Image (cartoon, rainbow over all chains, first blue to last red; front, top):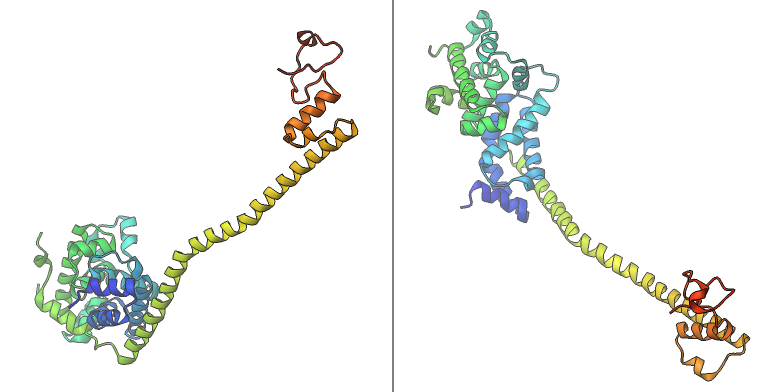
Length: 185
Length: 145
C-alpha cells in the first residue's frame, strides 16, 4: 500500500487521479474537522474543505516530500485565513507578536464571562463553543495537534512561531478548556 | 518539555467527538476527482508545452536565419560582381583590356588598372608617405611597399 507521500507524488507527477482519490478518502474527515474547529460557523466548513482540496490539487506540484498532513494543514490554514478571518475580528498570532503583549496577559484578558461559563455543558456543542472561545493562536495549535496529529515542531513551523510558544499555547488551551468545561483544575 | 504534559486524553477525545464530521459525500468526491482529472490533463499539457517550446523556438530561429544568410550571400556576391564589373569597365574605357585580366582576382584587376592609369599612386594605400621617400614629386600620396 502506498503511503500518503507516494500517493500525492503519484498524482502530482503522473496525474494519477485514483491515487489522489485515495488521499481524499484517507484525510477528508480530520481535515474537515480541523476546519470546523477554526470556523466560527458550521455553514462554511464544507465549502472550505472543498476549497482546500482544490487548492491541494492545484498546488501539489510544489510538494517536495515530508509530512502530507503538515502540507494539508498548511493549505487548509490558508483557506481558513481567507474565509473565516475575513470580516471576523479575531486575535491574530502576528498581531500579538507585533505588539509584544505577553501571552499570559493576553489569555487572562480573554476569559469568558461567568454567565457564559455557567451555560456551558460538557456535550459536543459546549465543547465546540469552548474551543471557539479560545484565542485564535491557541485554537489553531489545539486543532492542529488533535485533528491534524501534527508534531509540535511541525505546528510551530506551519504557524511560524517558536516551538516553546506552540507548547505553551497548547497547554494554555488545555487548561482553559478544562476550566470552561468544568472537567478539572 | 515533553509533549504529553500539554495534553489530556479525555479532552482530546471530547474535542475529536465534538468536531467529528462524516465521510466525504460521494458527490463531493466525484466532483473533486473530476477537477483533479482536468487539472492533471492541463498540467500534462503545460509540461509538454514547456518541454517542446524551446525546441520549437530554436527551430524557428534556424529556419528564419537561413533566408537571411542566403540573402546576405547573394548581396555579397552581387556586390563583388558589381565591383569587378565596374573595374572591368574602367579597364575597358582606359584601353587596358586583354585576355590576361580575365583570370585576375578583383583586387589584382584593380591594381592592374591602377598601375596602368595612375602608376605613381597606390590606391590601396591611404597613408601619407613623404614623396621624397619614393623620388616622386607633386603627389600627396606615395606608392606603397
